Image (cartoon, rainbow, N blue to C red):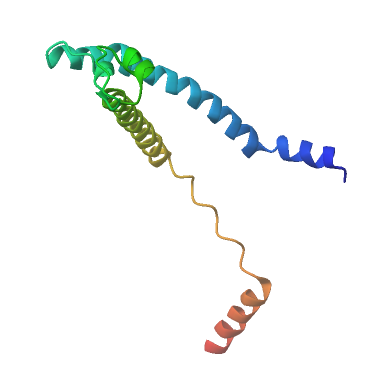
Length: 139
């Protein structure tokens, strides 16, 4: 078998295609969660704690006196803990959404009606003959 045919067989297997679809959907879903956290949740949280923008929470490690994170990064090393808080919140929301999806999938799997029990397999002929002999001896 040539390398090309082996690669083609590998690439068209269901698992590889499923994985590719999952990665593409995961990337798009990640962007949705980033937007939800950055554009919807963090502004509300910032408003609740006094109108603060978490993206501009940082500690200047090089002694710079910048007012925004972008300026501080240009001037030297920065510990950007506000950005970390945003990414952490992104992760928590994403993990919760995935948990809820898996929970619903598991619930749907449990609710599938059980198939009707299959008829028992026919009794082998030698067993039937032995039972007939046993019954004849009892009489």
